[in-house]
Each structure stands twice: as structure tokens, then as C-alpha cells.
Image (cartoon, rainbow, N blue to C red):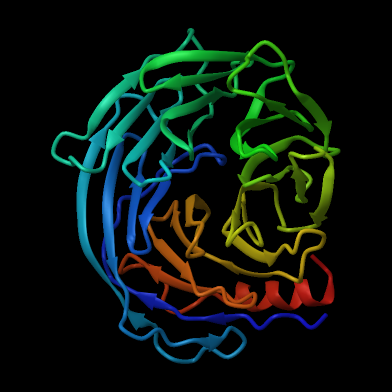
Length: 366
């Protein structure tokens, strides 16, 4: 199979964005509510940022980028919300009306994007005193008021309808990721990563686990589902694909990244996968239901502090620990088009790591 071409459109706006500061490597402080509308967080604050892309994006082969980056504007930047506790992750509802904020003590906040002047809808207190650590929440795509919450030091996944607790699943191990998936009959299921396994639950009956599947030889760190397909990945650097109909691995994307995979998404009806690790790498491959085509990748100038994507449009928004934002779009047939928004003191021009990574993936060394 011929390797897909790796094209880039690089744009830069000399604007100062909020820096992420020191953060847990699994934190994901970015959400997306439109192709050019992002929500990013530093340790204690959430901001709305809107970008203005160039009228025509110029694509260059990553092996021969010599032109000066295209200019791109930060159309608006506004403060949205402050948290007393350190922010871990942001989550967007399927209708793009609500933004979830998870904090290191297990508390959470749900914000309304329709009323930015007074965004807080409600807050959820920690279910029990917990050590500070990584936490996350996800919205049920079919019911915007339903959410699932986890904390790395709490052996439970807790379900809420708005601010009312509805169920709590007792786990055998500490959880590392949670995602909603569809059963074959289109009912909603909950997939939870526990150690090296994935457990499947029915939110309507919290009394028993439907199934547990051992997937990886090392701990899993992230999960995402589209329809009946679930993608999970972690320390092993391999993305595994499962189906809720049989709950067995359908295939895998081996050596997806150089380091651990801490973020994974199924895009474009489950056929494109993007993964990000503990460094500055972002990779994209094509999943056809049984195998993965060769991937392409890029590097930002600093470690990712968060990534978010538009599942239908296949756009990715990334925010780095150095305060830069990237909009990655127009994947096409395995193509990447990263658009960078950097602070004025950052280095000029695209990174050469992208060329190295592309060559390494084509010769199989990664």
C-alpha cells in the first residue's frame, strides 16, 4: 500500500494565548464547539477563543515547506469561568451547548455556552474525599443532561442526570478512561478502561457488568467510541479497536506514537483515528473496519496540554503547554494540514520533526 502524502498548511498569528503551565500529562484542557471556535483552560480558568482562518489555505508537502506561514487571526478571546481547584479536563456535549469542567479533587462544573455572562449551570461536589489526581467526565451523545464521571483514585464510575446522581458502577480496578458507545440495538452502553481491560456496562442497570475484555499487555489510558466501535490505547502505544456486538479486538494500530497514547478519537464515521501522546506528536491513520492504513504525523513546538476534534468535519484543535494553538484540518486521504497560532516569541516556521516522523513511519522504524 502506498503511503499517503503528508501535506501542511501552516498559519501563524502573533497573539498571546493563556499558557497551560505545569499539568498532569493526561490532562486535556481543550474542547471544540465549531471548526474555528475553541475552549481552552489553564490551571484555574477557562477561555473562549475564536479563530479566523485564511480565505484560502495553501498546502505544502511537508518535505518541502519553504514559504512563509500564512497569517491567521485570533478573532476573539474572552474569559468564561474560574475554578478554585485545578482543572483537569474539558468535555463538550454533542449539541455543543454545554461544556464540562473536571477538577483534580473529583469535583465538576457544567457550563452553558449560550449564556457566557453567567455560564455556570451547576456544580458537582466530590463524591468522597480523594487525593488530588486526574479526573474526567463525558456527555452521553444521546442525552445531553446525562454525564459519566471518574477519578483515578476512585474505584467507581458515577452517572448523573444534570446534578442528580443516578447510578454508580463499582469497579475491580481504578479507572483510566470512560466513553459512551452504542449497543447493536442502538441503546447506550458505557465502556470503562480498567488497567489492561475494558468493561462494558448498561447505564440502565448498574447491578452487574455486561462483559470484561482483556485488551492490552500494558495499562490503558484513553478511550473513544463511535456507534458500536470502541478505540482504546495507552502505555503500549497501540490503538485497539473493539466492537460492542462481540467485545473482542477487531484489529490494532501498532506503534501509533513514539510515547504513550493519552488521547484517541474516532473521526469520520469511525474510519479515521487521531492519537496524541505525552509529548508533542499528533498522528492520523485510516481504519477501514479490519486494518489501519499507513499513518502520518506532526509535532507541535511543545507538549500537548489538550486536543479536541470535530467528529463529522475531522478538524482537530490542539493547545500546547507553551501557549500555542493548532487547528489541524483537511485530512483528506491521510493528509494533515496543521495551522499554528503561536506567541510572537516562539520560533518561526514549521518544525522539521514532521519530516523525520513521516520518513520513519514509511520505513517502519516507528
